[in-house]
Structures are given as structure tokens and as C-alpha cells.
Image 1 (cartoon, rainbow, N blue to C red):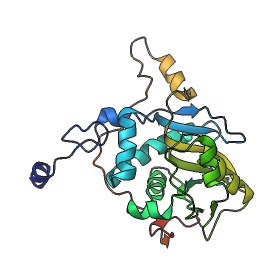
Image 2: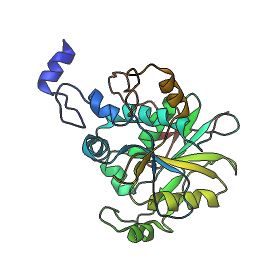
Image 3: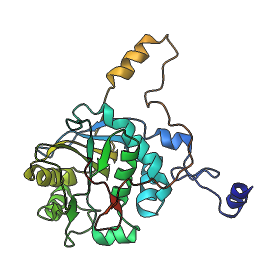
Length: 273
């Protein structure tokens, strides 16, 4: 009764296609069920993967989460990225089977305007969907960095170079594998600068995983296990190339399993015992 009343007063609208009656419909969520390698010309990058193309309803969903405070989307977007992590060709947890997830840094002014770091919230959500994983917010961005929207690739690199730094009070031992997490991959400038900082700290960056990437630069990453299952089925019974959609869910704010607090006020994960 209460839910029906709230729907009448405040209709739920899909973040991707604006369909009423649901905060995020199944077809729009299915857009995030893929895994694509991003072709970039930036040298010395680790493998860069995304789960969707930055267009249509996927673009609208990311913008709703990032710029319009649709925090309820963090749970579903985190689940999509968590499902992709075991399929990364070179992704690797540490020797104890623990995944260390490093969110890309945001400008402090942008984080305040968004009500906190949307990337830390997303990375923390991913960790709740994996058996052993932690968000590791150890990268910071200087205030002198400007908004990168509209900048050319060389301008993006110049904007970030020497402005990304280690900001966490604790980081894993040298040699620990870490995975960078971002929302949108455009030119690879963020991946390049963040990777250089993490490598200088002795960490092994196994890749970058983001929600979306640029149209025309994505190559589907085949899942050997899924391909084997598909080939074993009879003709006409295979799944679509976009993967299986996620089950229906009611979005909620993802819990952050930690007692520590980062500079932007959100909780981060401490080292495992």
C-alpha cells in the first residue's frame, strides 16, 4: 500500500530510458552485461575493459548516477562490474584470493557537488558482490585539475599529469595486484596517469575496468566458459551475445563494510586480517 502510494506521488522513472514504474528497467540493465576490450593509443597501459558502450540508455544511466545523484543505481552498477571481474583475462586477486579495487579519483569540488565520491560508492558496491574484495581509495586529485569534458587527448593528459597522487593512509605491500575502477573511459588519460602513480608505489596494476567506453573502439571479450556452454546447447537455444540479464532487484544504498573514513566522508575498507 505504501509503495503504491509513493509511486503515485513520486513516480519511479528508469534512469536509462525514462520508462515509468521502475527505477531501472531490465532492458537498460542488460546493456551492462557485456565485457569489451577498449582500443586505446596511449602507451604502457594495462588492459582496459568496459561492460557497455557510452551511448543511448547506458550513457543516460551513467549520467543519472554520476551527475543527478541517482545513488540507488550503485547496487545494480556494482553488480554488473562485479560479474565482469572474474572474466578479465589478466585480472588477478592477491595470493590470498582478495581483490583490491582502486577507484579513479575525482576533484573534491565535483565530489561535494555529487554528495560524495560516486566512484568510491561504486567500488564499495562492487566489493559487496565479491566474496573477498575491498575498495582501496588511495588516489587523490589536486584542486588545480580542471574538468576534462571537452579537452583533447593531449590536454587531458596535461591536465592530470603530476596532479594525481597517493592520498590513502594505508596501501597494500609492494607487488600486490590492484584493479583500477572508473565510470567512463574516453581517451585513456586517467588510466595512464593513475597507473603510473600506482606503479611508482610498487603496486601491480592488472587492468582498468569501467562502466562504459567510447563507441567504435570496443572489441567483445569472449568468455571461454560461456562459449563452451553455448556450443554444448542445441541449435536455437543459445543466449544472446549481450549475456544474461540480471535478476530483478529493488535498488538500495550499498553497505560499506568498514570503520575507516576517507577524505570525502565515505567509508572505505581497511586491510583484511
